[in-house]
Image (tube, rainbow, N blue to C red; front, side):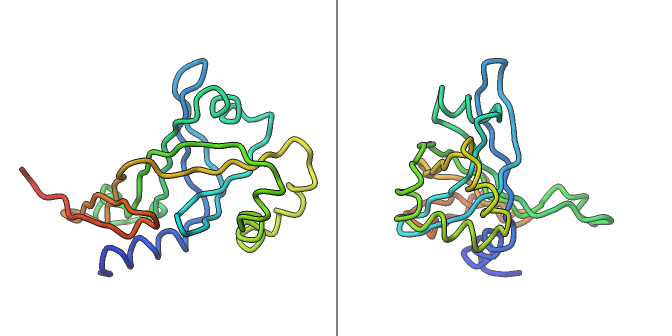
Length: 162
């Protein structure tokens, strides 16, 4: 199994869709969001439609949760209870298209998603920058849980029993 930092980087390179948890008017809600990443410090970038419930929720309250997880595997002997995943608290900020382009978000998103050209042609799509807040969690399997932090998520501390 890969070292934790290497495993986290591999997960972020290979999994282009995250679960985004927001607090909505009707209560908590979770959405799947395609994302791209810039570094120095790490920021996650999503394109959101004005029609999406998570857009209104982020406008009302910018605090959210983001989880990137490996996919379920049929016949996994671990019963999929120990999927590799990273969970982060994030602060959302709506960003204009010019700023997103200048900060490298548009380039990163276009490289990851061929549909970006279409989405950027639609007026109701907006850039949101998701900045990690505090430390998050990274699970690389049973007994391999870590606190993760730092500007580029490079600080990993093994979580052990009490």
